[in-house]
Length: 213
Image (cartoon, rainbow, N blue to C red; front, side, top):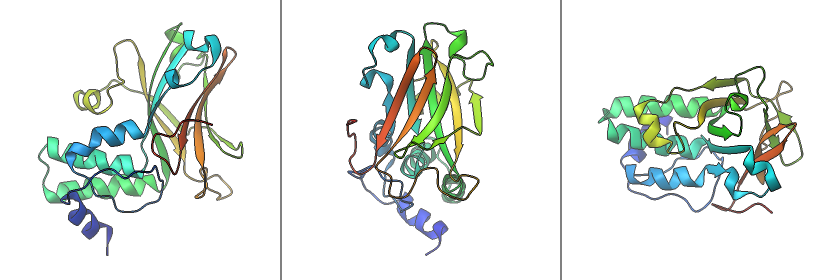
């Protein structure tokens, strides 16, 4: 069955969020009410981790816009904006096609020095890496500072006047063709690192909301 037909069928299907985090590109069954649960499942905050005094100088929240999150987002957005079936389907098709090539994160960040917490500045205090369980590191191919829209303020509630907001993009494949997140990966880290220390935001695959080891 084509992606278009799958999307049409499942966008209208009742369902609930799955019990596990998975990067597998499989059809999902969501209603618009499921978005908040899926958002929570794919969002990590530095407050969930203990790094001594580092919490005094950096707080990061990141939403991994994985296949599942994208699907739930389109269902919610299409409902809120009363999109036609064709428009919903095209939006989903484009988003899932992009997921095959890019790992996207929506990040909000605050720190003791507001200017140094701007990741787009040359004098930013922080470098960002995507780190796999084997220690392989991938740098972002795009970091865009965001002036959030009204819709983004609803769909990404970590947005605040006191926090920077960024769209961050990593390639799904390294130059040698190997995946930046292997299909059998148990977890992946989004690492913010610099002279003051490091914060790792971690997504475990296999159990929803799992805590770091």
